[in-house]
Image (cartoon, rainbow, N blue to C red; front, side, top):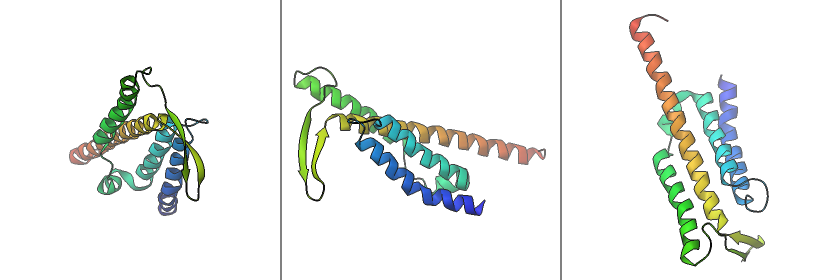
Length: 149
């Protein structure tokens, strides 16, 4: 599985860029935090398939519990900020921003909510992958110790 593994590792940045694209267009078109989070989680799943659990976890820099916590805080914070300004819970504020080389771009507070959902989905998926990988490692150790296959 050397060639498929190499291809899956090379696809990681491509899938990550697709996730960013889905995240940034989510409040204007189909996409958003959930779709972007699932897309980014697919990048991690590809790495687990390509390299195996031990290879990925030796290089894994995503701490899933922190991602889940950040996601919950960002999503809840977006709703609370709207409530502080006497707006309905999770009401979105919207404004255009002029950026050099990119021009005039829409910016909405819903993006912060989408970012929180993105982090929550990625964190939960990585946590599930880690749990499944540890289970598969534990089963292979048990089988090899008992001597039966």
